Image (tube, rainbow, N blue to C red; front, side, top):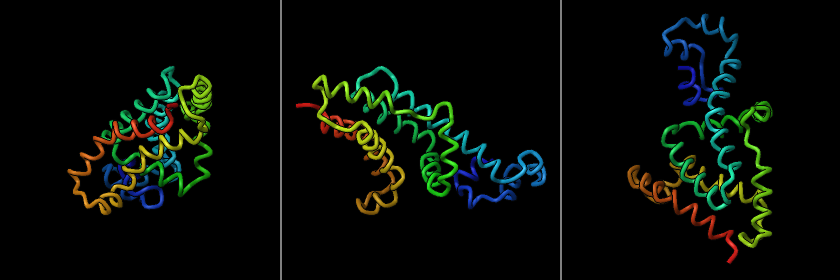
Length: 189
């Protein structure tokens, strides 16, 4: 239950009493096992991050081509997001609210490392497959173009005047559209 409360309300909005009530246990029992809200929050956040980080790390560090990595990331992120609709918003919000905590995450065993990805981008540029592009910028573009439509859904739906069903259809099409867009922008012609 703590996970649900933290995912919905974040660290600042979550209350130990609410977690206890939803868990149907005494609040003092939670404090006995976890000492305080910060400790419980860090356990939940690490669990959540342990779901997201390996997904990113596996895709960017496998042996596929950059084009395949882009397609795999886009497809897998959409599927992941459907299975875990609150996780991305939670992680982004909490990282912005508590940047010092992010430093702790960097020691996580599955924290994404883009070194291999950047080297591969450079290699494919030298092979004439890609136009000259900075590997970090490409990674940021991939992440941004995939995550933004989910975290900014109310904003985008408002501007595009889409209802929920239409927006879900747009996101489904986006699985291939965003990958094609990125790939077409970096392919050497």
